[in-house]
Image 1 (tube, rainbow, N blue to C red):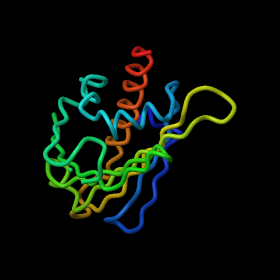
Image 2: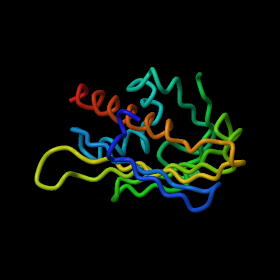
Image 3: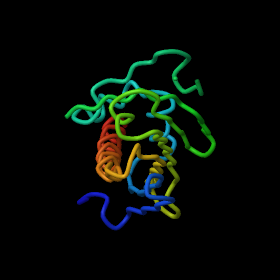
Length: 157
């Protein structure tokens, strides 16, 4: 867990249910980072092509609460633009081969007294059985995607 390191917080509710959290400091504004997921998720694959191959809208509208390489189909469960917060629930794909439920919340907050933001990733999950590992590699993926989106946003300015 090289990139997540000291910022990783792990809470195990039971042997099957848990939470992982990590904070990632970025230079972009909280609003711009949030908008990448809430308003332009199809641009996330452009910002982090090595991690995200594509993002397709299956129903509804971008930014609205509705809808080896891994595939995950996610439904947006909550969008709070005033808090720069968005919550996704994985509803299909590879993650559900090992997890009964997988919910990801991304909350970007402006840094106090300076430029940039902190992105807080919060993952709640329930494993299908005790043989399944906690999704710590997913948190590492979140850190990497955050940094690549940050670079992308800074290059847009």
